[in-house]
Image (cartoon, rainbow, N blue to C red; front, top):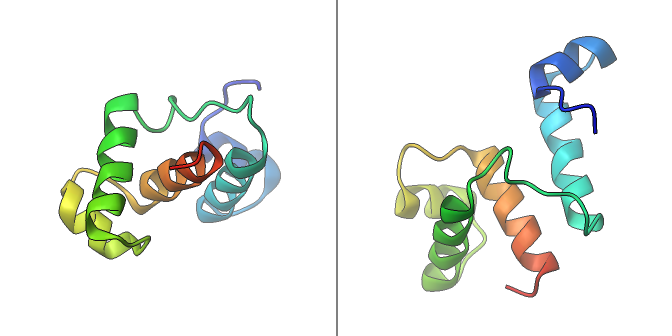
Length: 88
């Protein structure tokens, strides 16, 4: 809500950035008002969901190979969580 980066939050909370990423993915899964556009562009979200559907998998490595090297596992997890919430 305060528009802090993952890194800023991890310092403030004394947690690893990967833990903050896990929390962001969880929030995204359960809060319909939480927008992930800050972390994953709409275009990339669509590419990730389409790759998952094309390959019929939720396996991050396979989706990453399909989408390309520029995507992070965090972005894939977020897009998939958001996609599941929207019925994709």
